[in-house]
Image (tube, rainbow, N blue to C red; front, side, top):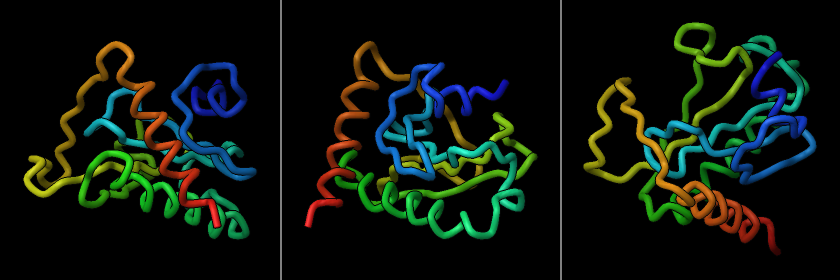
Length: 139
């Protein structure tokens, strides 16, 4: 079974920051930088070419929402948005990485050093990102 499908179905816990009818967004367990979010389609597809054409717009609109909210939520200047298709894809379920970025943060090229959250820290980041996303939805 797919771990991301398990998260989507609630069988595996995750720090979910955003849900829509089409996607679930949650904190990466081993973030490049704290606040690193994965956006996955609710339907199991492995790669971007596998995503049905009529689902592409809603998927990337949700990715765009996360990318817009992350700088505020994480005191960052911008984001890095990326996805892998097969090569370097650690989970065989389409997922887009949205990583908070700040000038001088040390990320260079495609070398992605990973970190871990301290006890209770993931919950704090998840709450901040969820609040920033909720604030963006208000009129």
